Length: 396
Ligand code: SAH
Image (cartoon, rainbow, N blue to C red; front, side, top):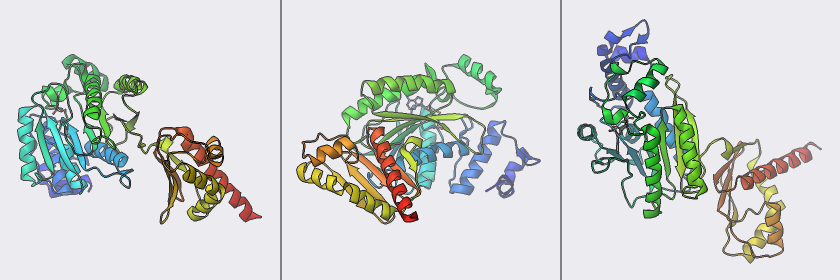
């Protein structure tokens, strides 16, 4: 839906709409358009609290879709339906958008501001979303914490308070040419001692605690947070590098978020305690192949090795599964790596590695699970070689 249509359907917006441009400079104008958009696009009836931060819906949607994009890439392998939003705010915007955009999941939003908790609960109730959204108060903890649950978590998300204090806000806002006074917000939405770096640090540390307490719950969970300040990306990366080195987490990834409709710059960070791969650049390898032909030639090249490994090491997993238009390799031993192939044929006892799952379609090879990029990369090389072999053979 474009702006013209939205204004036409909601005459209340006309006051702020001139020459094809909407005036976003006041709290009232921002809230009105957000409410109209939520109604028109998602059938959500939302009355926003004018004393709190007004969520810009396109930005919120792009972050939510980014989280889902990452989490959904392993839906064929793992089921987990709970999404946690840390600091859900008075609008509970992520749970609301999540519940109406994705049918199968339910949401817990946490919050420390009593007014926001009440407002968020009212919104959930008035939209009949109580079975799918719970607003949980975190009043007993100034530091952000994940609620403890026995359920498997899909992902946790967060839009943290960005700034250390008012001075920090003015310093950065002046830099960005903003007028911070003009838009409503409350202290806990904007400020946290140490700013967003400290907030996310506390999330990282609590995620490590949580993974000790409830290892089952986080075995396919992504911990995610948005970041509003570019410099924070470096500080957070440094923190995560340390946690990875000391094996408290397994992996992390930081990315710039793209929002077509907006010029606001945002980044997002994710980390985990598992070896499912975030579907980013390095986990995808583009190809142009015939899946069935490639599957057959892979099998004819390595079938003997696979058989030898399976016969001699029954505890190891070493399979290629053919699906409709893709095949999947699941292996606790990367049988396509030369050293492993030889060991398999010589019937040596082999120590398993982290399970490698790779899925092959006609257009790309996806690394789904595993800890060693070299294993994935050498598999991609092999597939490319097999493909060029039969392209060459086909041509002669
Ligand atoms: N998610 C909303 C609000 C983000 S502002 C949105 O995107 O619009 C950050 C929110 O985190 C505020 O509502 C603030 O009250 C909340 N918050 C601050 N400290 C918190 C803590 N320790 N636990 C949970 N929420 C917290």
